[in-house]
Image 1 (cartoon, rainbow, N blue to C red):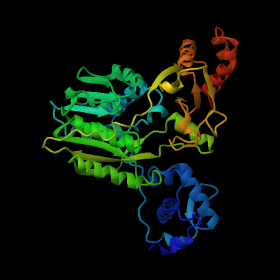
Image 2 (cartoon, rainbow, N blue to C red):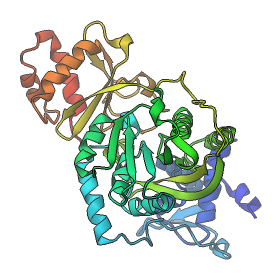
Image 3 (cartoon, rainbow, N blue to C red):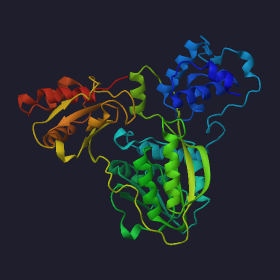
Image 4 (cartoon, helix red, strand yellow):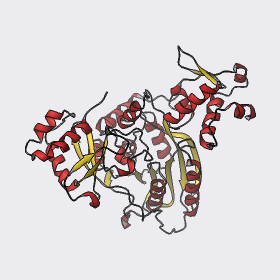
Length: 441
């Protein structure tokens, strides 16, 4: 069926991933013309920059055209729209959220701080909360103990829908502190990094563990390992994974993950493609605006998997104790969160800030860890501004002092006035901080 299409594909070289994306776009356009946001939903988490690039190649090759008035893309050969398959709709399109549920969702979301790229945070779309809570509560009993690792807002929602003891576990202390007013007495919060050891009294004590890891192999594997440790025999584990088009090589990563799950003796009970969907956080919106793309609606989704732990005793085998994620200290400037690495190697010397390689305006071009210069970044904000910092011990003192001034909004004169007590040599540092805090439309 695809032979004619493969001949029609543009010169994408031997890149199997790009050719697969192009084929999926052509397949989707068989049913009807689709806009760019429609295609992002259909391709399930493929990077918008990749989709835009492939669309450009398909247009140049003459395979597709674009309607000037609607912005919808269509196949040049309209006869190929015969035998069309129904296109995938937004998973939330047919889900109605009750007034009561929506009120609770808004209460919880009003407490959430801005999502942070330091912790790879994306908040769920509204309809996900009742949908995911229903899946969790179908398996939980009133006297169950539930744990949510890396998904505290969902844990907060579920805790208001059950009397089961509910643990919200996350590395982001400010997030857990913000959610505390929304929690009932039977909910417990715990600041915890999965790359640290799990407390012995938490091992094997939870009938259900829900985990939503950052989508990189070492995080996914470690989150699963900690979930297995926390889960009771015959207990259930939910985990989200990046869909097949998320990035090149992700299918191999998914297969490695399933092999790890099998090595733990887990039984895969069910998969929900696009079972989780996420809002566009400010830092992601800023990244794509920099590249000329406006993300006007959510596009990122994850595949949700449900496993069951065996009854037999299991060896505790954390997947990556030798791997350590960056540790951060947070400073707050109004609605902007600033994260500075705790890395001991950069603490000494004079404090300074420089732009990441390839990003002279201190703004990262994507949210991906593969972004040029991202590896050198040890200061990052919730608006995707980033820097390479030295002398971080003294820099932290500067940030503490400036944070007392409140929301500086990147005004250079205001930042300089707030730092009036610092020596003159600190002016370049203050100006760099002003650039980092400067808000953009």
